Length: 312
Image 1 (spheres, helix red, strand yellow):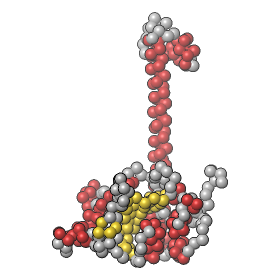
Image 2 (spheres, one colour; image 1 turned 90 degrees about the vertical axis):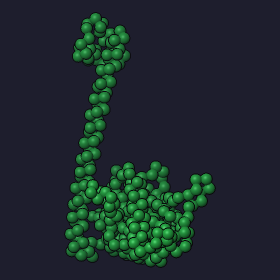
Image 3 (cartoon, one colour; image 1 turned 30 degrees about the vertical axis):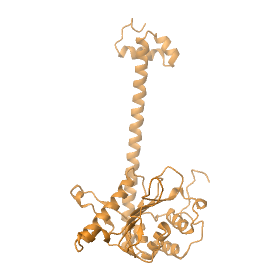
């Protein structure tokens, strides 16, 4: 396919990675359970979608600082899952995921502390894992999927801890799905393939199972309520405004860089000419060696107030 040719999409007017749409999908417990099971390979029996979709960092409230996630879910064994969809590349994205997990752990401890003795508090903890769906490339290699957890640097053994149900589990873990890198031949697991293909919003290359068919039905706007359609239209306008603003910022940034580059080149030429003149080179010689017109060399010298004797 021609690189300039626009890729076909299943849903031209929306994307599964849009904030409102992703929340609509992941607020279906059956779909979220299947997604977590497919990505983290956990024996998920059931999922509870926790109320609220924002994790508030209270100590920064006076600055208007908060972290917003798409979905927080709790598995039947108490493990908590944060699902984040990222459509633009951010340099501090990993730091943000760490903030999500740290704040969730702190919130859990604070909640448990209200009715638990301090010495039993830590035994009541549950792990918190994070799944990130990324539209833009983040990692340098070509892998579309990776999981990252705490491991021994020498042996590679995972760090496990006993949690509330006494089963040893990793205390934290991250999973990343980079949609733009997806290649069916390099992702062997069907359950991963189906979610990659669903979220990238291109025609399916593999058969869809009942879970993905149910997720696809949620994208059918003819089945949405009037309120959902109005909310989507408003979100779409906000997104279009944001993208237009970011495009303008990028254009102005690139323009500023180009202007500074041209100023730098001009300054560099002037410095080169003046240095050669001071070292005894004539304007004619400089013109021959640098392809700078002789008249331009003389003009630079005159602006620098060099005497006729100095410029030969």
